[in-house]
Amino acid sequence: MYRNTKSRVLYQGLHSCELPVLQSTRHGGKSSPLLNLVCIDGLIKEFMNSKNDVCLYDLNVCAPTVADDMVLVSVAKHGLDNMLNFCYEFSKKWRFLYNPSIAL
Image 1 (tube, helix red, strand yellow):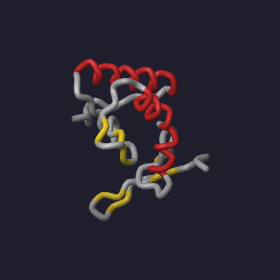
Image 2: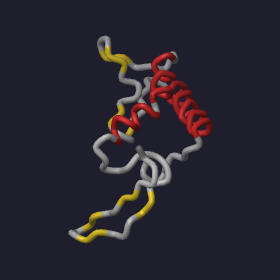
Image 3: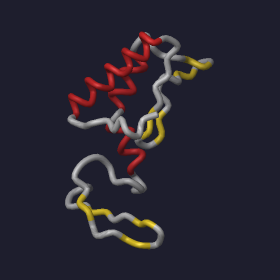
Image 4: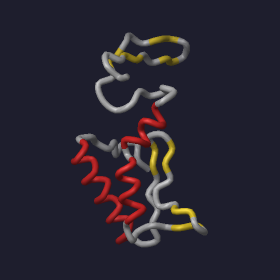
């Protein structure tokens, strides 16, 4: 599905040259949000099985996720530290990096 995939950037009506998509999911692709959730499903399950979860009624809201954006929610610093460690270990296992310059 993602073999030899290329993408272009559209900015103010101008297109860039084609760029190869070498890793991750294609930004703006129709299937990208779903594919990203499939990729991070293990991380979300790790959060839900931990003791660091936050529930609102019966809904676990420890890591609300949309496409490739995720928010970590905990009631204690210790819980948030554990969740950050889960993220770090998951990124090492699957060989990807988080971009701290866009994290708030």
